[in-house]
Length: 318
Image (cartoon, rainbow, N blue to C red; front, side, top):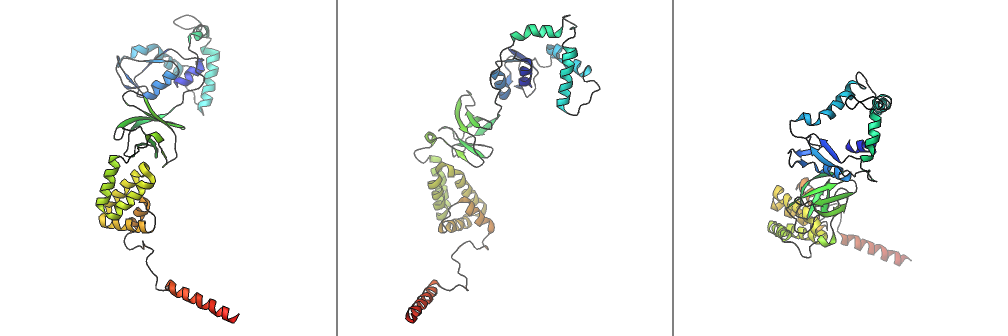
């Protein structure tokens, strides 16, 4: 609404006096209020300073509130509109024909003339509108990433387990220091399930926390440890969540069942968390291995001997 008001006026004011709504003020304080980060950045984009009102002091904005009541009682009283566009067109006509041409009750001057004198004092508008974003706090996971809408973006080294402030829109994800507001990393927005980590943020050696995870996996079972090693060898930090997933399966189904499922996955050449999970979900009755032999299928040696006999008989006839 601020942005639309600035563009309708043809410029931005230098100061905005506002109520202490959560959209604008998170923690009211007449001396040092905490502004909503998004609202603060919108005002900064237009070069505007916010001055929140004193709490429970409605007289501070009395004239502004009176203007709202004037609009309700004069042009809109008893009116109904099918859409916002229809209401806006009606108000534009009312403003042009009546509101701007009237004589103000306090100043005794025409409203349009006063605005013509004040308009040059407005600040020029920026070339581009503000790029709106969503924001929140995230904890950096063991793989060095934070999660935003099921996609994962890497943080700088040394931030694992710590909280960062995150801003994201349709194009970018920005990680900020929660204390200083300094930009830590900026990544292109990724699709769901994808990771984005800078090459310089990837550790040269296996981090201690990953070594501890692998040690837990080996302690749970030989095949469990081997499968987790294969996941880490192929996927490095991106496989940490899958290793954690395997360990969660161990906790849910027990070491014996999980180790057997990991053995099957390794024998079939599918060392993946998802495969192990499906094996355990299907249960021990389901056929999990290709080693089973159907009684209707003969040994491969018999097929080989039969083919050789046929070839020899054809050669003798020719």
